[in-house]
Image (cartoon, rainbow, N blue to C red; front, side):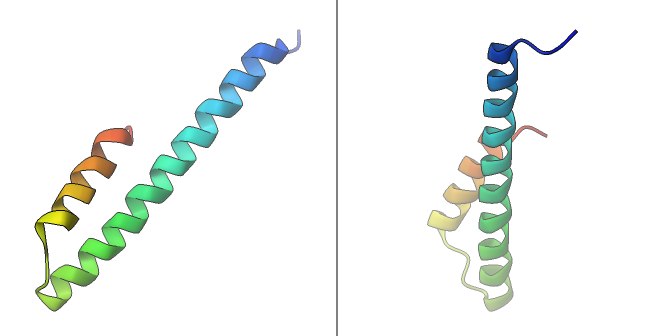
Length: 58
């Protein structure tokens, strides 16, 4: 039994979305880490981190 093409496409979409969200979270975390190391954490970075965390499933 093979996967129905629509199911495969839906799965592909889910993986792509998860991957993009994970990349976004990782990028924001690097920016936050560098800002913390420099003592330059801003409310904008906190907001970016909250946004990235809220869209990436754990």
